[in-house]
Length: 336
Image (tube, rainbow, N blue to C red):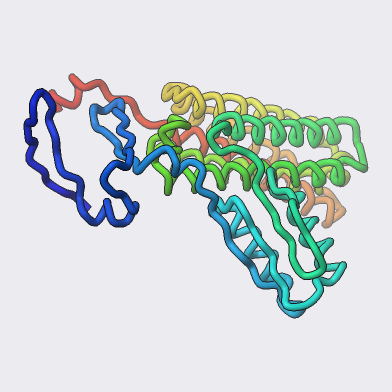
């Protein structure tokens, strides 16, 4: 909502009145302090007081033996919405197996700890300070884990390792943990512009980090799919060709995330060329696959699935690079 106010001069100061709705909503009275911040675009932001930083956002979730799955979903939802305290309250004793399910869920959510519990209640707190978190660092951590998963999958392909799939799937859980943490931070910044400014995140940055995190989380899932095909395709005659294509995708990941975090538009544009070159490599693998005429139907399907999984991974890196904003010179816009 917009408000128009005339500047009034009293002594050497210029004053404006505050919107009455805003004053009432924030329960302000004469003598209360408000915080004014100047922004890079020469605008200003007005906050009720520093006391708002210490406000704790809490929610109570009712426990029922018959709807524990719903309770788990509500814990995820409360975490992602930025609640600092989550209280689980039951009319009767919380069953042991349900209590263990809740604790297993918490292990997937960074920063959550049980601070108090009894037979029918569990009190959970988010113990990290959102002001100390960094969206770029969390995204880089996700990228590092995903990159390690992919390198292990390629090594498993070259070394014909049978157990690589389980190793990769276990590490995908950590990708999910970082993903949930980043989504929580981004959502908190969306509803709290003061936090967004402390994190140096514009509205576009908030949206871009949310989308980039989703692409990285998807890449982790696709790497799991690729790892599932490794034991089969490592027995084929085209394992070296698939490994070469896989190495190319690894280079795409490195350049894509670097382009996004550094806001390098030229590197981003170069990803389109890299993806087209990757597609040519994949086409040559398909032609080679047709020539060797694999007699094992399941083996043929495994090879095609591996190619499809690598293509989906590569598209994730193209999509991340596409988030880099075009940079236009002011003079160019004026002359357009």
